[in-house]
Image (cartoon, rainbow, N blue to C red; front, top):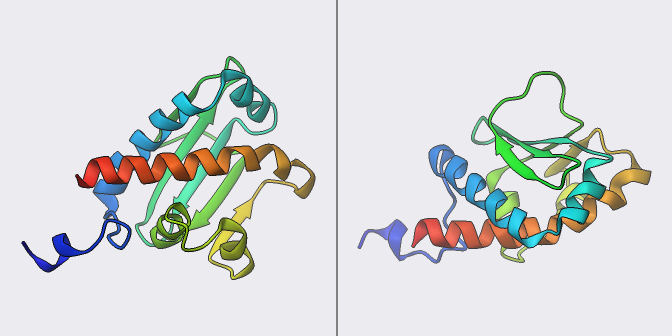
Length: 143
């Protein structure tokens, strides 16, 4: 067993190729956790959310529609309604309870564009199930 395999899953970070697969699985899990009414409510404010992982030079887009569906794609035409910029380690640490998105935001490790403060409350219910889904997807991927 090499050194990387012996590390705990919460310390290993996905590379760019792994991240795409893990994010796809994350969104599939998230779609099962959220009620369609929750997705519809969020979609009234944000239909496209870009997750920009600056350390991996990788972006994916979360699409929410008013019928209550959620999906992940790698490209959109136009400008997304919101962009969340962070490093993979910030997402990973938040998913494993080592930090919070609030702390990361204050420390400048997470940037949010396009979400006005008054509409941020619509986005917050998405975070906990998103982080749980990411953790489940990473652990399933990593085996």
